Image (cartoon, rainbow, N blue to C red; front, side):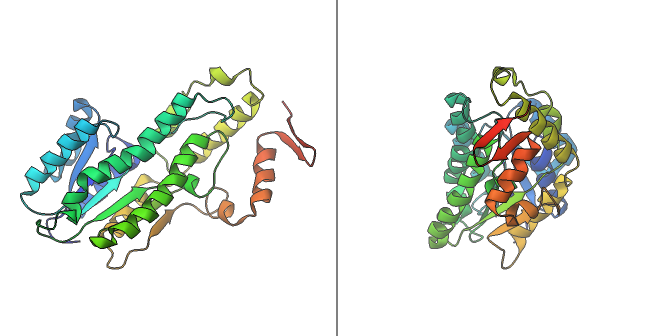
Length: 293
């Protein structure tokens, strides 16, 4: 990565995004970090000081994204942006059989359309505008183990992360034209405040469905696993590697060994189906499954 580099990171208020910003600032990178409120902007600046510039916008707001891109262009003064990290996202929880379609659309709008909208706005600064000095930058899309192995009741989230994998691969090949690389960093379970929020997710809409018991068991497992997950700084270090390595990989997995790490990726899909089904309390057999309570 070149000297005096600047990188845009979306979703830096807490968790993985904040950790990415912390790691990059320690490495001497100036971070333009997106938040959704002036309060979060003030907290971001208070913690990281002159190493950051907050950008107040939502990834679903085209006008806000465009204004942020103009601000960054003005601050760079003719220099190219070294990187864009698409991190902002949400997770919608519920059984696909019953989940409201507007919730599914919201998931895709934030986790898939949002990163593309941000990418389109910043691509000129990453090198598509060849008049800028500094050469092409890199795009890092934050994926998930859920983009390789899908879990029940997080179908909307997993669908968005599977889609990020395909989006990133197509984009990387298209942007060969400009020399702009596209890399995926795919974390497994990471210990962030999101797991505290997960305990407060309202699932009352599904209490009278056949999935209620299984959702409760699976939710408890996911929260326990998440709270024991990797520190978010590990993801930040992987992002730094993706941005700075002379010959980066196309994808960096960041996960613990075991059940939530490499095991789900190597087990045959039918075996994994049975393993997950038993964990949710299903009686799995050739004639189908029934919840046991």
